[in-house]
Image (cartoon, rainbow, N blue to C red; front, side):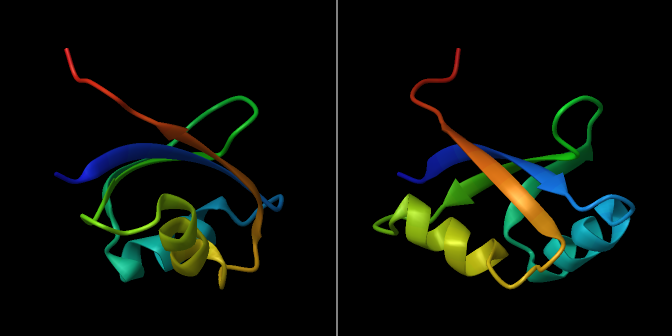
Length: 79
């Protein structure tokens, strides 16, 4: 079974759309939204079976230089 995680991303000022475009090209997310508040983007990702969550996210996002910070929320059960 795949693991669903939500990743919030803070971008360097003025780069949110460039970051979203770079992530979209990777085709790793099922949904991505721009958001208001402390974080600029919110992504929903399904981690492949057997993959390490942290390694998967670091490999997927580590080469996007305009990302300042991210926060990952693991999910357990959908209601």
